[in-house]
Image 1 (cartoon, rainbow, N blue to C red):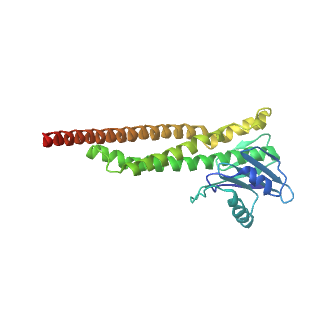
Image 2 (cartoon, rainbow, N blue to C red):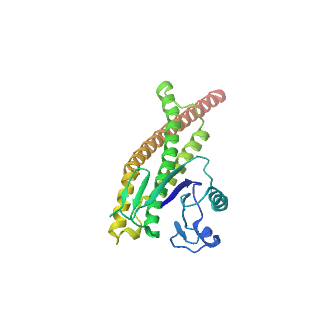
Image 3 (cartoon, helix red, strand yellow):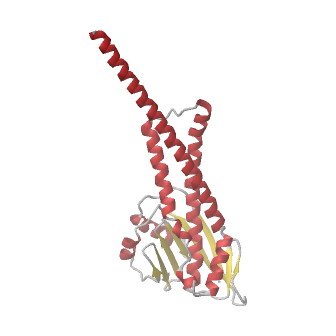
Length: 260
């Protein structure tokens, strides 16, 4: 027996509280930031995270499409990127223990808690991919201004546009930092050694921790670039003020000479 799992980055965030109140299914487990459903009547499982990720298990194409259209009503900003990840759970009763592979995990038996751990890690992996894309875009866009500083020794961008760019970068950076709690281990693994081992193996399989460290490093680069651009803007504004003061002094001297 196999269970097909697919995780999708649909939006930047979901209003989980409102979604839970209006989605007419009993919650298996959840919090203010996530909600997990075990729809046993049709052997489907669903995991929705407030950072814009939905994970499906045993959903056909039509059911996924219908739910995506529904959950978009609770999204803040839709993500127009094809970010998804597929995985499988293979049930083999002959196996003595869980075996994690690159694109599937084999288990001797399945329950909702085990399925939740698998779906959680796939959701984390897709979310990290989204943040990696955002950070890459920011670093790439900043290279243009850095090259301009290297070649011309100044920035041709206006103050307003530069402030808009800084604001955009800070907004993305804050969004990433606010949602890095996704890497926290769920409470249910603390008292269950088997689930804890499965969780650790899945994190290793999806390179969750190395990718987080790389993302953190890129965020440091972004922060350094912001500091540089802010310093350049301050210097430019200081120079402008100095010239204004000089011009005013010259005007005052000219006026004084004219009247004398």
